[in-house]
Length: 344
Length: 222
Image (cartoon, rainbow over all chains, first blue to last red; front, side):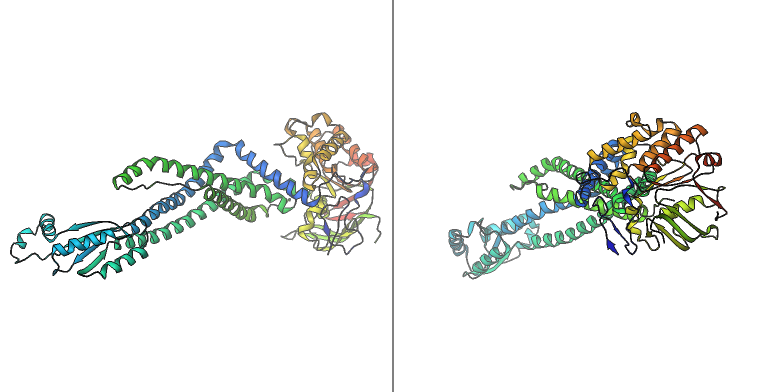
C-alpha cells in the first residue's frame, strides 16, 4: 500500500502493486497546474468553512421548522440550566447565613442578673463581636409566659427556673463556620457560663439538602442532554433521507465519506449551539421575571441578596456544550444512515 | 498484460445474491483512447459491467484492471479518489434539481478541492463543449431531456477523466438528439478519452463504426 500524489498533488493513495496508480489522467487537453488546485489542507479547511456556512444557511432558509427544533432543544437545555442558576444563587445565600448566625449564651442559675449584665458588657467590647442583647431572668420568664402558654404552671414553682441569657451577634468578619466555632469556644470558657449554643444546625441541614438537590440537577441535566442528542439525531436522520439523491450523486463523482458527512455534522452543531443560546435567553427572561419578588423577599430579611444569571464565560461554555451535543447526535445519525447510502 | 489497456476484464464472473448470474466468464480489453459500444438486451449485464469498472460492485471471480490498476481488494476508503478519474453518464442523468446547471457541473471539482476561479473556468469550458454555456444559471428542471443529458455529460467530463462511461445515455431521447449525444462522446474520444457506451440503439451503433461488445445473458459474444 503506497501513498501516491496524483497529477494535481491532491491526496490520493492507491494500492500500488501495479505499475500505474490510477488511470492515466494526462488525456485531458492540459493538466491542471499549480495554483489551480488547493493543497490538501486548504481544501480540507475550505470545505469545513463552506459546510459550516451552507448548513447554517440551509437551516435559516426554512426558518419555521428550524425554529421549532431550536425551541425544543432550548426548552430541554433551559430546565437544568435554570435549576443550576437557582441553586447557585441560593447556596451563595446560605454561605452568608453561616457567618451571620447568632450565638446564645445561657448563664449558670447561680449567677444573678447583675453579674450576667457585667459579662455581657465585657463581651460587647470584644473585637469579634458586633452587638449583644441581654435578657434578664425576669424578662426570660415573662417571655416564656407569653409565648409558651404554660404560664400558669410557673406559678407553682418556688423560684424562676430560667437563667439569664446573652445573645451575641458576631462581627461581620466572623463569616465562616470555623470562625464562629472559635468564638463559641472562647465564650464557653468565660466564668459563669453554663452553655453556649450556635444556631447553625438548620444551615447545615439546608446545605445537606442542597448537596442532594445538586445531584438531582446533574442527573436531570444528563437526562436532558441525552434527550437533546436524540432529538438532533432524529432531525439529522430526516435531513439525510431528504437529501438521499444528492448524497448518491456526490458519492458517484468521488465524494469521500467524511466529505459527505461534514455538512450534516455542522447542521447538528448549529442545532445544538443556537438551541443553547435560546436556552440562555429563556433562563434570563425567567430570571428577570422573578427578580422583583425575590428582591422584595430579600428586603424583608434586610438582605442585600441579588439574583445573578450566567456569566459570559459560562454562557459561552454552555453554547459550546450545546454544539457538542449537536455533533454527537448528528454523528449517531450519520453513522447509522449515511454510510449505508451507496449508489446502486 | 498489455500496458496500453485502459480497461481489462479477465474471466470475470458476477453473481448476485439469490443466484442470478449477471456476467459469466467475461474477458475483454479496451485500449487507451479507444471507443466502444456495449450492447445487448435489457438484463444482459451491461449495467453490471459498468458498475464493476466504477467499483459500485465487486466481481465474484476473475480480475479487473483499470489503467493498469488491479481492482481486486481495492480499499473501500480509496474508492472516491479512484472515481474522480472516471466520468459517468446515466440514463436518468442524476442531476440535482435544487441547484443551477453551473453548480451541478461544478460538483466534481468542488469535491476534488479545485479553487473557485479554476472551477469557473473549467465549468464554462465544459458547458461550452456541450453547447449549454448560456444556460449555466438556470435550474435543470427547466431544460429539455436532451439538454439535461448534456449537462450530465458536462459534469462527467469537467474533471478531465481518462475514462468516460455511459449507461443508456440516449434511452429517453429521440433519434436526432441521440445522434448529437453520440457525436459528443466521439469528440471526447478524439481528444484521447477512453469511452465505453452501453446502449441498445443498434441503428446508431452501426452508424458510428466503433468496436462493439455484445452481451447475451451475461456472456460476451465476440
